Length: 233
Image 1 (cartoon, one colour):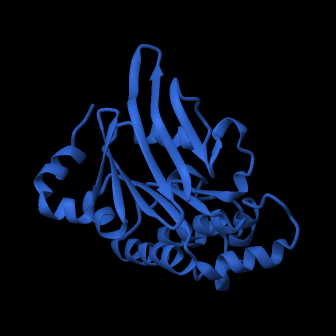
Image 2 (cartoon, rainbow, N blue to C red; image 1 turned 135 degrees about the vertical axis):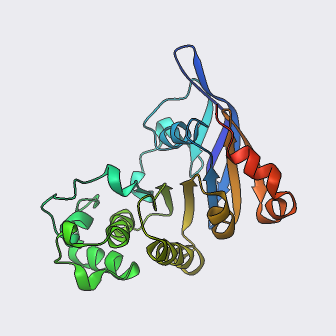
């Protein structure tokens, strides 16, 4: 079953074309890496998939439904860049941050605790956000995305500004969520080496278009894909 389908997506800001003709699909249980440097169009594509922008051409389907008619947004979680979500001095506890993600307050304590357990942060539920490391803060944002028990999670450059060991722990959590819970993931990044190692396959943005590649294709012709992933518009 396709959880997400993009068909001939196009997008332009005025006369500036950002996406030319983007088509790909994500099936239930996939772990997909969306790769591309700044200016390649990946941020615009993510906003289209989240319904924050309207395409100038083409179609998006979520759970086999046109995005314009789609209302079950609790099925989709979103993990933003850590730097773009809260000021470091924001006066909120871990538990309060996760509660902000709830669509419904029914059984909220149980849902929050379960989400925090999944990212190994339940023991820090009463800590202030500013007391946590960068890696811990990012795990809290995953818990916030998990609290509605979604089927698909978008992650936008989630390890920017996070130390190497925390990145490793973060990717281990994503791997477990994908393999053990069959949670579908779309990981947006500019780091080809890491994402090629983590994801099942990659959708690579370059000049507003995409190519789909597997780990095996990258290993076979690494220079080609490194060149593509570093191409600017």
